[in-house]
Length: 157
Image 1 (cartoon, rainbow, N blue to C red):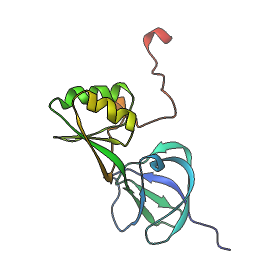
Image 2 (cartoon, rainbow, N blue to C red):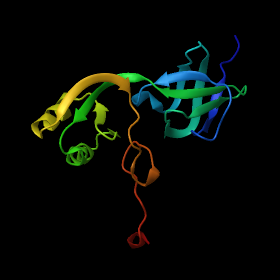
Image 3 (tube, rainbow, N blue to C red):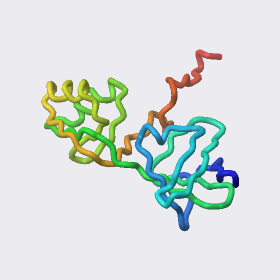
Image 4 (cartoon, one colour):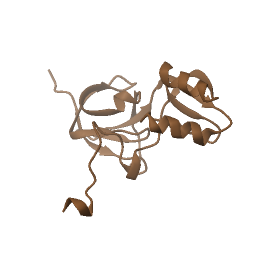
């Protein structure tokens, strides 16, 4: 049996070009280190990275045979949040460490009845939708992590 192709190289959006197969993954599935994946065209491969990373819509994986696989944000259950004070609503979402996609006239969050109820209580109109989810990255340009990262300060030395 022929071994599966392996992806050990990530090409971030804007750093690659050319033909690529598509692999659609939801937000949770785009946070990975080692996993068996399949493209829309049926190519099965193993992603095997040195550390867990968050892949973004438009990133590509380079397989050991040179094939590129573009990562696409898959449709998932979301809440579209609108209201008279989006900044205040976004603050409450962020205060609960909930990933949020910020658009000009609405916010998108993963469907969570508890957060949805809280937002409605704050005056938001919350609508269940199905769409790709590409939330904002973490502070200082870091994506999500398993836990809070410690940033060294002058007091640490």
